Amino acid sequence: MSQLVTPNRMNNFSTLRILFAILVILSHSFELIDGNRSREILTRVFGTISFGVLAVDGFFVVSGYLITKSYISSEPLAYLLKRVLRIYPGFIVAFILSIALCEYVSPHLSAITKGEIYDDIFNLVFLMSPYIKTAYPGSFYPAPNGAMWTISYEFHCYLLIMLLAFFGLFKNRKILLAITIFALIAYLIHPDKYMPYAVMDSSSSIHVHIGVGARIIDKVKSISIESPKDDFRFFGIFLVGSCFYIFRNIITFRPRYAAVAAVLLISCLFSKHLAEPGLAVFGGYLIFWFALHVEALSISKFFNENDLSYGIYLYAWPTQKVLISRIPHITTYSLFFSTLILCLILAYLSWILIEKPILNLKGLYRPKDTNVRQIIEGT
Image 1 (spheres, one colour):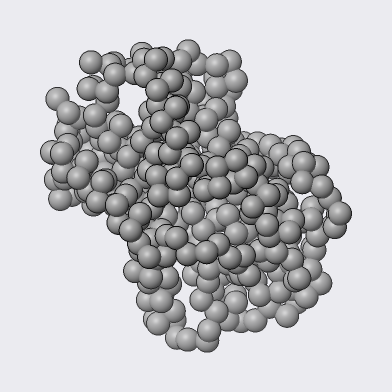
Image 2 (image 1 turned 135 degrees about the vertical axis):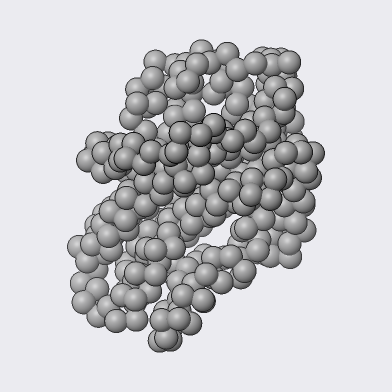
């Protein structure tokens, strides 16, 4: 049996999340300039996925592990409060600033309609990307913050953990594993999975003039029922992380096994069918081996206390859009390094002024003095 050898917070998870956030910036630095994803580094090497896709999937694998651990060690309402406090405050501020930056760059924002304002209120509540029709006109991906669309799926996964626990599906590890495999297969066979790649011209949003009730219904549908491919993708990958936690006492982590996992991962990356499943499974093994079984790096100790990855992810897109708009001939790597420096500053300010102080409020909720229910941990 493999036991976790790293004490609480003495791990490399935060460093990995920072790395994933940086990879998103790198990937978008190629694509946002001219809309050509084929120039992106990982896409050129393997012809399947980009560093952006790899990073987002990595985020979800790590989140699946940590969120499952959090739920099992928490009272349900305390768990939900922590998740809301972690996601919403930083998101709200970045959402508003993303729109404000559009006003700074685009003089056409004064034409924003009442319908767009309503849409953005609903988008904010449902953790979706802001929508401004006149944002960054004439550019590729003219969305105020196109990276925010994954945040709603992240929060869906938090709720999924509660739902699985409510129905007792954590009581049998085989059931959880079966659900995970089903979600991954459903994603692989979904007909939209292999549609030719096309440049998006707007963020996901509802912008027709309909009633409030119908708008809410359509908004819910737009992020769930009408997006089964993405539901299966993110639920499946998130649950892979959950399985790594639930099966942690029987998974053996060794450097030689990590080397084998790396070889298998690289092999999978050449296949458009196996790239993401391989990333979730073999990449997941590498992630948890490095995070929990390699001595915590010095930089990890800093990032464990100052979690900047969320802020970097939230502010990267609007920062890149502003730089591209203001410096039309900016090169890919100039865009990357400039964005990285600015986002590190913005993320640190977000953490110190918004995220960390709000997270401290979780202590205001005091669950009743009862034993924390024990959902199976494989023992």
